[in-house]
Structures are given as structure tokens and as C-alpha cells.
Image (cartoon, rainbow, N blue to C red):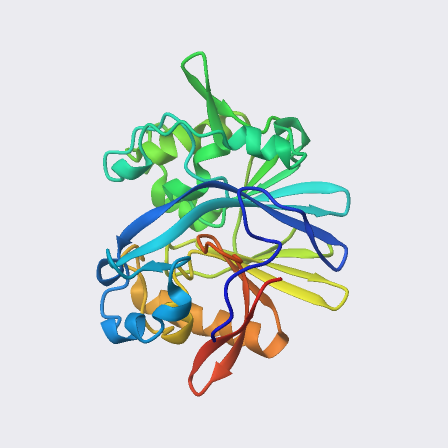
Length: 304
């Protein structure tokens, strides 16, 4: 695994890549150092970072600071005449007491979407792989002091289990979670939310599947078109080191053991079926093919 992360998926916006009949591109909201590696993936042997430093740095890990390098980004899919967004980043002007690095941002994300040929009114479907702050932020925008759906025509597909977990406990209550209050509840009030569980077929190329552990409703989006396969895995992976050591979950996982079991299952299918693995936060190429290596996995090649 010594190939450099490179290829057509890199950059704030990029030329699209075709997977069968589905056009795929990404729009980056921000890239920055994240948590120290030892804090983000507790229990991961430090040696695993050091012995793979040649390819982890600089895209995925900074050896000097020990911090994981990460991107917050949206995947844009054009499938069967519709525009689908996979996750919507952090958003601007948010109050985030428990995540100050996501608070009060002022990015040009919507301009980047526009440069990729996507206006808010063009979006047909928004997929939130789960309901954490950095996956739902641009669900809404501030309009005259009120949060309103950013994508006025879109159906927002949200996992029912996460909606129940983060949402209000009673029908007449409001959620105490500020992320739910500003990025989910306004979509609910607009009647644009569609909750799903188990599996949900979007079209003949795209299917959502439950992948719990990181959150109760964490999900993956599978793409199958012609001979091409991909799986958008959300936060099942925060760093490629978790491909090498899939038993180690992040500190952000609600159920680390379940997350690890889900990770092994999803990576196993990806290796067996040659699915391109597309995590939410990988910089560089942004996606990789994986192979089995004993009871673990390795990167066969980066997306090109």
C-alpha cells in the first residue's frame, strides 16, 4: 500500500467520475487537522501509524502533531435524471457547544456546489448517512433569523433510528440537541423528511442499508450500475488505519463493538465484490478499493 492518494476525486470540486451510468463528484466544505490519532481511535497501536507514515502523510495523518487530517465533504450523485447529495457537512453560523471547531463557520460551500453545477433548487434527494453535526449542517440555512431547508425541492432521507435517538422524546417537546434543532427539525416542519429503516431503494442504482454502531441509525449507500460498484460508508471509517485494523472504532461511536462488527462486514463485502469504498472524511483520493489480508484488510488502490 504505497500508492499516493491522487486522482479525479481530489480537490474542493472536481471533474465527475462515472460509475456505470451514475456520475459522482465531491464538493469539499473544509479540510483541517482533527483530533490526535490516539484520541480519535483509542486503542490503536501507535506503531500502526508510524509504520505506515509514508502513505498516511500528509493526506490522512500529520506525524509532527500526531493529528488525523480530515475533510468534511458532500458527494454529489447524478442518477436516473436526479441529483442526490450524500451528507451536507457542517453549515454556517451554527451554535455547537460540544464541537467548537464546527461553530460559527462561514464557508463558501454553496458557491462550490454551484461551481459543480448544482443549485439548491436542483437537488432532488438529500441522504444523511447519520445525524451528526458534520453530516446535516447544510440541510438548512439561515433566512431572516430562521432556519429553513437549503434544498427546497428535495426529499431528505434520514435514518429513523437516528431521528428517534437525537430527536424530542415526546410529540409536544423540542429536542435538546442543537444539531437536531437547527438542521433536522426545520426539515421536518417543512414536510421534506422521509424516515427509513432496514433498507431503502432510491432507484435502480442506489440503495441505503442500515449500518449501526457509529450511531444507532448509521447507514451506508450502495451504488451498483453496470459492472461498477461503490459503497459510501459515512463514518464507518475516519482514517485508513481502520481498514488495516477494523476492530478499532472511533471515540465518536455510540457502540464501538457494534461499529467494529459493521465495519468488518461492510469491508468484507467491498473486498469480495470489488466495491469502491467511499468514506465521508478521507482527503486525497477520497476513495479506495480494498482487499482481504488475513482477517483484516488493506488498500489495493486509490480511486483514480
